Length: 397
Image 1 (cartoon, helix red, strand yellow):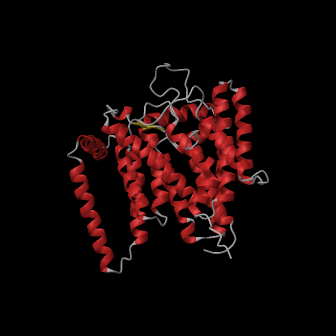
Image 2: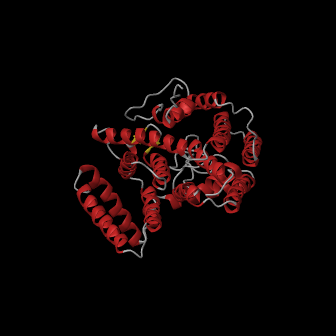
Image 3: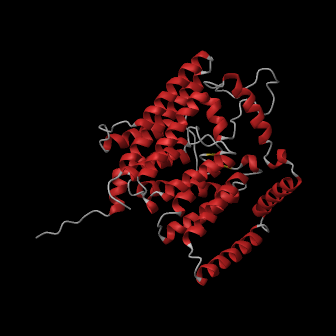
């Protein structure tokens, strides 16, 4: 009897999900930022991502997918946003941007909700994406592309924004079972995260590593304490060497200044003037608290004021600015649905990478703009979709 050769799982995954992978890769390399290994197009690069996602859905026959409550809430949120934006005479560019962002969020969420029960596809997406992003940062530093922090960029965006994608990738991969070369990539991603000089990301990743150590070491064993001691010595050794380099000295100086500002109670400089930005944003939010002012602009002060049209750099304030109290309640309803699903069907190890990743990006989102941005939403809704796939799947842990 002739033996049938079965395709390897990885080859099968690549064949089945090739458009999905190309879509996420496009977010890293199609860019208007002056980043190594990236190029621009004469039309919005996000259209390539949308086309790839739709092709993926067609190839995998997702036409019969039922839209759930979370997607309906996202759609309702946009309808309210659209009506409010028309009344407030907001530019069509902003209206279309939110339309595209909402559409992508729904499609990605429902897509991963139906295919990601084992987390392998999400892992592959983040491995490929974070590798490209890390290489872009390292090549940029090696080629002296970055004169200062304002010039640090990968294809996905500038320093603080890049950091949120690396943070998401590192956290998710860290709590999965990974092969040795995948662990090396996590190390590369951590180095790249340090290079972004994002202080908020440093805090978030520090919390992630503390949780990882506590979760994975048995504190009743002497071996665990020896491992911890080794990690501390290795970290101190690496940091001591790192600060002697040109790149490391800049990072060290930034950290030193932050610590001095904190000890002196200089909250303005410690938060890079975020308290001033939050106050400015809150004043604008109050102008249309119920449905959202949408644009962070105050016509009563100079148009050249530094924070005019800025994002709020805080996930709660950003939600209130864009969608108002009503839309923020819808966002909270989405969170409640997710939390109830998780509590009703605990899956232990399977859900922990998703939960920890969401916590990490929320911590970072309290001081940086990540949620409700066009390029970050595909990633966070990929995580939400994967989480829902796990908790809604039959069977136990």
